[in-house]
Length: 67
Image (cartoon, rainbow, N blue to C red; front, top):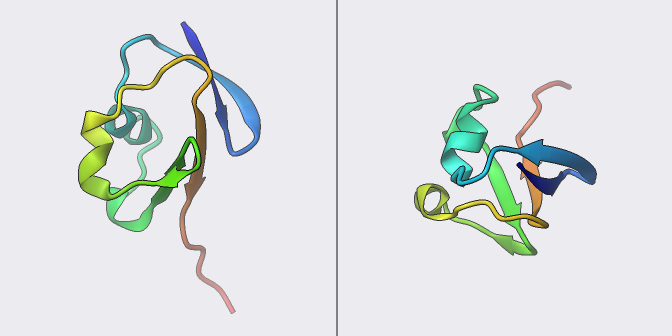
């Protein structure tokens, strides 16, 4: 187990999980998600290449409709 900070909250995660798999575990549509990873905004095609490590910081943002 490793520990991440996701949107400001501590979250335990399985070892050797890539970012795309992590996002998929929430059922998110990756076309409508922006991810900050340790201070950098990633392109969607980078998600499978990023292996999550202990201490990583993620900011996951998705648009919310309304008016």
